Image (cartoon, rainbow, N blue to C red; front, side, top):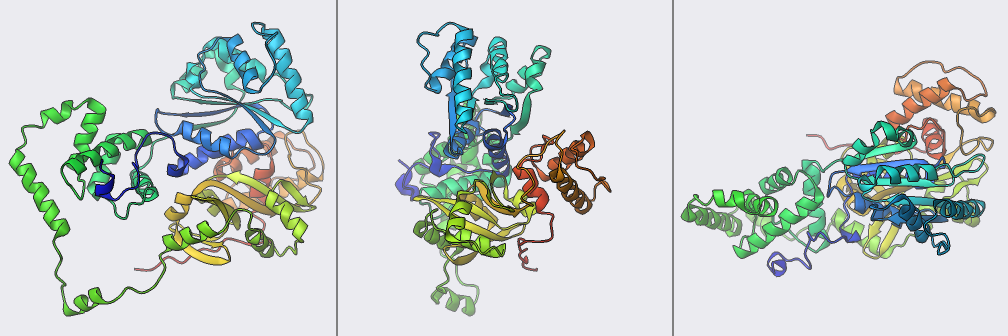
Length: 535
């Protein structure tokens, strides 16, 4: 009922999931990176744990994860964990489309059937992932059954990766002494926190932008009040903002102030009890304030000088706004466009053939001897630390388009999209970016894809050299020694650097860690740093 009044094509704050409205804060991108690590880069099996308060976006991240699954990934998604151990195992098998009619009720038969499936999937190069939502509702017995599933393995690799999504109570549950064996198998933990005040404003603007809003119907103080009353929880932001728009329409308010937000929050969070306590306020005074606000909004402002009057009448310069330029390019270019990959190869001074560019765009690990490509996910701040040009997948209404990130600072980013170079606010990039990127990097062809404690060979010596160079630049410890054996000391120092870089601190030099270490090499292209305007 308020759509026409505020110039909206549809309700912007519906709590129904819709991928068009997805806004990812930096913490959401970190959370998604942990989930993608668990599916794509984990390899060691075990558990990935993501927790957060109700309404902070866990299910949204799960949906995004399902959209970005690597090729050859089989997923069992459990939305109702209130199951006995045997029911849990039956549900996992059903989600993986296993024939279990003759095995129902038997834990051993179900486990054997699942193990045979996992071995077959492993032989075919497939990953198998179990995702359990609302995992805080699992019983201790069911959690123990889930732990036992991680015992399914070959001589060198776990066959099953398990992701647990839950409310903060899940952390308390896993702290129990009788579940310490499970807790020790969690390879990555992340707790999703609510939005900050500035992120709340960006979130509101984003949702309004999606539905065609040409102006912000909330005052700045209203947005601060919205953040305070919602606690930065996206679901509560939606509920309160929607009620505020209804109230604003009912009162014909062009601009919604903090009082309307407070009343909407009282209705949404406390059933109107606080609002009833405020009825002592004078109706006449409230109407007068609303009338003054409307007059101030609508009253034409007299020009302060003749020069200003002339400027107001002069036609605007035909300069395309950054947001309009980005929308135009996103709408006219598809992800299949090879120009970004050609540009990335040129930056690395690699004369790639058409076939090599095709393999580079697939980004499946080692492209050619010494040439690697990595799919990863994380916030823009991490890309700034990485300091390398990367391919960003930017989302539009028609799909995804690939852009090359060329420069970055605290406020702006420069990208190349469709052969055009744009300098944009970082916030505008983040509105169209889900956090995933593709990065090219170099390493000697004899360095294996993964190095871990106990490994030997020249690849370990390369790792020591790169880690030593990284520590010097980070101002950490001095010489790390030499040798072709991956020992405890090398693992300790690698974990510490992973923590500083915002990577999963598993002490394993997988592709993402090797790429980060290679970024400390002076050879190769670097991200430019934009000059901030002075004054």
